[in-house]
Image 1 (cartoon, rainbow, N blue to C red):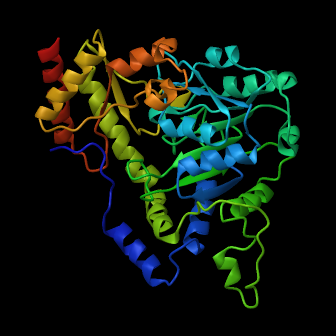
Image 2 (tube, helix red, strand yellow; image 1 turned 90 degrees about the vertical axis):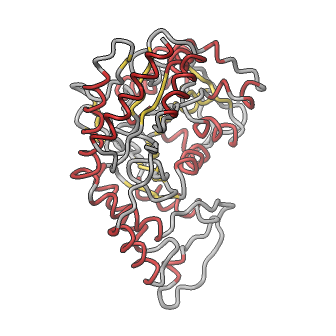
Image 3 (cartoon, rainbow, N blue to C red; image 1 turned 180 degrees about the vertical axis):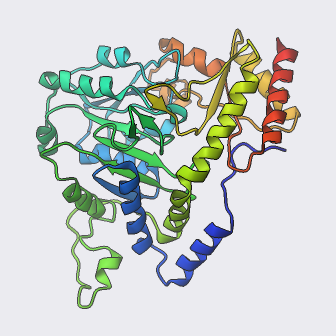
Length: 401
């Protein structure tokens, strides 16, 4: 059976995790802080906070910005539930909008239609690792600054809608020669087990706030917020005579550990010159082979302005309905090939349907979902495996259509 997306766990990672275990420091400590510094250097943003998940990062930043009941957050209907759930956690209203026909990403024109005085945040999602149209989205946030109704000191300081990118898929992606992490105000990465770069579970908040914000100062405040509101972490308290601490706010508990950061340090070291090269090669093989089939829409993953992180390879089958797509998936699995669907749109989920959302209000999202199949992409997927996947896909489509 060809799996969908197993993590790459080799001896280098095992050795580094063992070193962390034997160091006597397994929670947030020197490896986590080093990982944060290296991410900042890699992306070019102003400060980075590593946490136990991207979901935690998104929610922490919404709460940092003061998002609350009565506020609205604009996000694409085509995303994973985490993007919307964090808005609900804050008591705010998710305002779903439709996506582009060509690349699955949030449609800028649809964002503008839904901006109101209640809009506090726009949350674009880099689907499959392909960056959104950030220049246009950032311009929208500035254009509608006069409509922005600030209710907190931080909101007044920014003076406009916050652009909070769900960059869970796009670590290492490029937009106009800039890496994900510097494309807008704040970007949040995921290092979950199925991501290109994993820490088993984990995520990172890439701060890139404009003046007059001091990103280092905001990072330090967020370190407190994400560790129970404690003004000294365990590492700081190991300094001689520095044991005494205070709780300065009712914070949260979502810090990253050194055990998981150890995995990330190895992953980051070989990311550009090994991991991404292999994933790009797999994408190119899929595009070449499946591009011969006129019934398959090949995903956009590289243009003159954008380059994906090569996270997901989401094909769309032309002329099928959802039931036919599901049958194609079943037949592919019969060939011992694992595939997936990204994603069942959030407005189609029971919780959100019960709140009154209707997936039919997002026709492009519904069409994309009903025809989408994500193919296996992982470091150890061989060229021969890719050929097997392509053969299974072509055979299944032929059987159904």
